Image 1 (tube, rainbow, N blue to C red):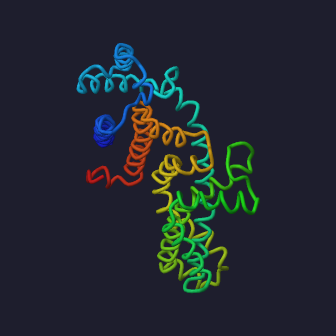
Image 2 (image 1 turned 90 degrees about the vertical axis):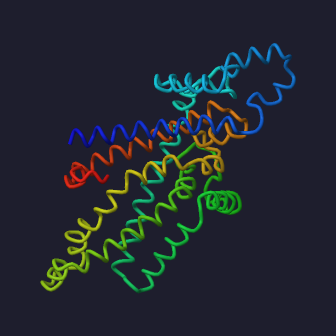
Length: 309
């Protein structure tokens, strides 16, 4: 088991290094100037001082090595947009809102998605099944950057049912959570339906039905326990995707989270902020995938023995 964990850890470090390297050099290919209009107004000597302050006066390979060393020490740099704030400070201030929105969206997705999947399986080839799968199809087909503006425009502005934006009271959380969770609802509903249908065809379920057990007891006592296992195995990656997928939703609803900061940093060419937030999001995903692999190895020894994962 130790060799398995060590191998997974090495893969995690290599993956993170590749992401850091690719992000750093891709930022250098972006057109424009990170200092914006200020660069054209400053005298050459002042601009040189400003570049030296951020280390932009050195060759790219030296900038890269310095940045790599800083990241290894937990330093993601200082924001170009906010010279008095480091990227770590921005993350500490903004990530709680993104995390809250992600958790709320995940809870909504689990509840609605599993219910739709269970209903679709129990009412297989009936209107309930078709209706549930239609909702799932819409959730997969329509991305959050389309759903979010529509919810804000119609439910928030035109109908006035819920607030169209901002991040204040509990009622401000509903529309963003719903917009972010729609795709996950679709995935969970389809998986739960398929898993329930597979379990319902097994012999022990047929035996339970032949004994005259009530449908509710069969579903809660036998089917759900086994049908939900495939869902549990993907909840880790899904949770990370939901939490890190708030970019557009936060911008539409004006939520002071990392997604809003990320979009703002792109428009202002804030190199260190873009790179730092990308590395932060990637680190979350990689760590969760690492922990998921370890959990798989603990649950099923065949995985770590085969070395295929």
